Amino acid sequence: MAHYRPERNVSGPTYGNGFKVVATFLTIALATYAISVALRFPLPRFSFGVQALLAGAGAMLAVSLYWFLRATTTIDAEGIRQTGVVDRKVRWDEVRGAKMIGIPYMSWLFPPRMIVRTGTAFTTFNAGTQEVLVEFARISLAFQMKK
Image (cartoon, one colour):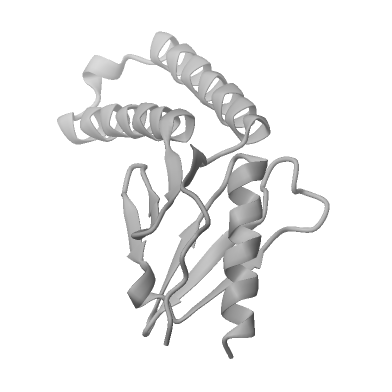
């Protein structure tokens, strides 16, 4: 089977501005609530396990927000790559099918995403810009036509 080749390399943020604003707002709200709880309750009296759990939750919240704001999706001659907490990469010779899915009426927050089938596994890629979404549509159409 011939492999897909994009006309040009496309790269952009993984998440759109609407999603980034909502994620930042929720992170600030959760951090503010955590600080208010810490001021109202004697956290040093809790066990080490509870303290470690709370510190880990705060660290994971910060790491998640960082990657929501910094993650990128790249489509080039090699395949599709997405940076993030867990990087994802699929080479074109591994792709068996590709399809775009979306949530009706919520595309301002959750734009359509690309689901790529590789043998028995599925990998999901997000796009935060129109340019990457257009390339996702081309990929999806190319793999529908190969059936």
